[in-house]
Length: 82
Figure 1 (cartoon, helix red, strand yellow):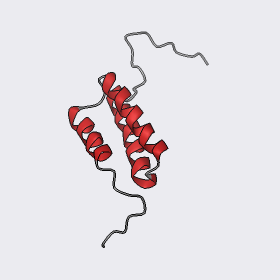
Figure 2 (figure 1 turned 180 degrees about the horizontal axis):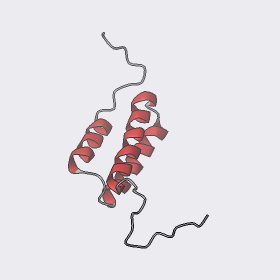
Figure 3 (figure 1 turned 60 degrees about the vertical axis):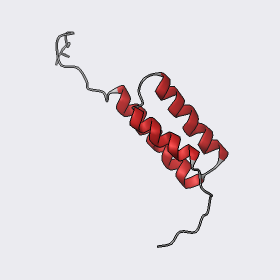
Figure 4 (figure 1 turned 90 degrees about the vertical axis):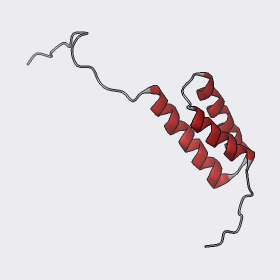
């Protein structure tokens, strides 16, 4: 059995677009921050969002959501009315 070589014009493996990867990573950091509300989770969210923004991978809408979340941190263990 012989292996087939793919030429550069052939089908290539698909990978998610960079902005989708950035959105997934930022989303995970947002969830971590919302759940834990620790200084470390806040720093991680700030750092990742700044990096994604610098690389041009974070939309203006997503950046505004992160900024609003960081500006309005709330308190950990806050009682919620259901």
